[in-house]
Each structure stands twice: as C-alpha cells, then as structure tokens.
Picture 1 (cartoon, helix red, strand yellow):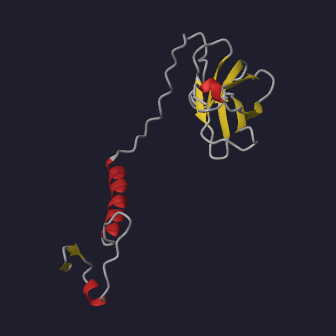
Picture 2: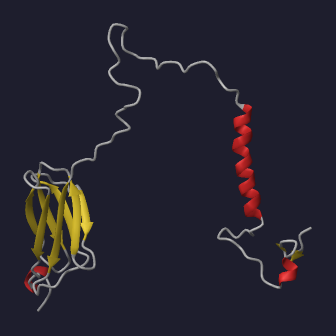
Picture 3: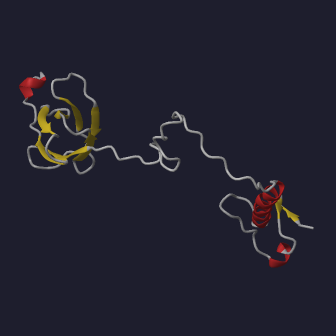
Length: 182
C-alpha cells in the first residue's frame, strides 16, 4: 500500500529511498504513467475484439453520374486532397532615414493603384525591414508613414517578376510644416 507523505502519493518503496518524489511535466507522479499506458494499450484491443469481421466485399462507391456516363472523378482523387499553393508576389524592403540609418517601427501600407482603401499593412522590424505577400498581376502603391517624417509613396508592378526589393529613404519634416513655433 502506498505511503502518504505531506499529501503526496508515493511509491510503496519510496520511503526507503530518502528522496523527494519525482514528478513529470504534468505534475503527476511517475506511478500513474505506466497505469495510463497499460490502459491505452488494452482499450484498442478490446474495441477490436468486439467488432465482428465482415466477410462481405466492400460496396462500390455510388456515383451521381447517369448510367451511360462514367463518373468524372475517381474515388482516390478529390479536389480537396490536392491543394495547390496560391501564387503570391513578395514585396520586401528596408526603410532608412536621411542619415542612411535603418528606421524601426515605420508603418508600411499597400493598396491597389487607384483605390482609396489600403488592403495590407505592416510595420518595419528592429532592422528597418518589412515583407508583405500580395496577389500577383496588379499594380500596387506602397505608402510609408512615420511621425516627424514626410509620407512617401512608391509604385510597385507585380506583373513581371516574383518579388520586388525596395529601399526607401524618408525625409524629415521641416519645422514650418509641422506648425511648431521657432
């Protein structure tokens, strides 16, 4: 019979070892792990024993096509099982300030050329870099925004290549434009 010490259930011989009980990651003691494994091993065997073996051949799949026409798809292939990756165009770039230092935290927004609404938005990382995947075959307008810097927009054509690498240099605002007093 297991010993009970400080509210923790121990192995029957654990009091002889003079060690703290060893716990696994779940906080349970190792004594429960073998019991759980044995339980899991016996459950599938008992479930298989209850099923009666069927001697009848498997029924053919029912086709929705008329009798004169063959089925359009075979049972082994379906449109859901083979998913093709969606093609994408990658816009990557780095944003710099007037001293050619990278700028982290710059807001980069992308929209289709001629639209008002921006569809993609991201921020530059600690090295001033960003990357956005967009559908290919369109012309895009990329707008960068950072406080105390002028907004800059750049055109990107995704019809020719697979990706486009940009280097964007932001210019600081002049004091008279911000409305600050001299």
